[in-house]
Amino acid sequence: MDDDRRKKRNFEPSFKYAQPDGGGRSLIITREGAFVHEDGERHTLVDAVDYFWSAVGHDPASWTETMIGYRYLLENAHEADQEDLRRTLNWLESAIPVRARAAIVAAAKYVAAMPSALLATSTPRILNILNSRILGIVWHITPDFDVKPLPPKVPKFGDEAGYGLIRSVPELYLKVMDLSSDMEHLVAGLAKEAMQYGISLPEELEAKAKS
Image 1 (tube, rainbow, N blue to C red):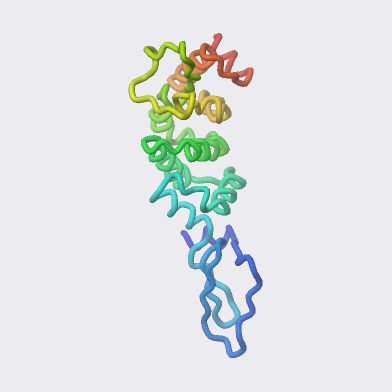
Image 2: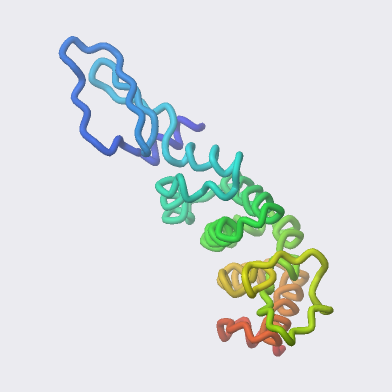
């Protein structure tokens, strides 16, 4: 299965490799992957997408070190399958406790680009992840701001508190709110609170908050 996926992705080394006369076996390692040249043919051992999943599996914030793999996945999100979704939700969940804000946004963008039918297969898990004010809302902290309504242990980033995913990736909330009535109710509630704190949202989310 993995070999079939690599063949379909068809990553190539970033430079042209000319195998020495006489054949033999050569190993080429680049940002695009690890390749074996043998008897005039190239075989892919691992590619940039493999690098990406391995990296974020160890450190969710390391996705920027494997951007080739991430860009490929995002550009081909319409072809994502359940394994891609499972890995991405794992990545998103693991980024939250380590406060990897940029990784959370990157993972959410990939999920948002996946087909709705695929997301529907994991509705309970997605609902459980997004059912979080800390994840969804962002609060602008000023000297006169009343912090009492804030959830406990909310992470702070400069003068902001919370991850603000509904602001950063509103398309995710727009997409998932049709997955179930519970999801629709959740998104409406988060959108309503976001607007109360001055977060600008797409018209469709604003309408849902007011409905």
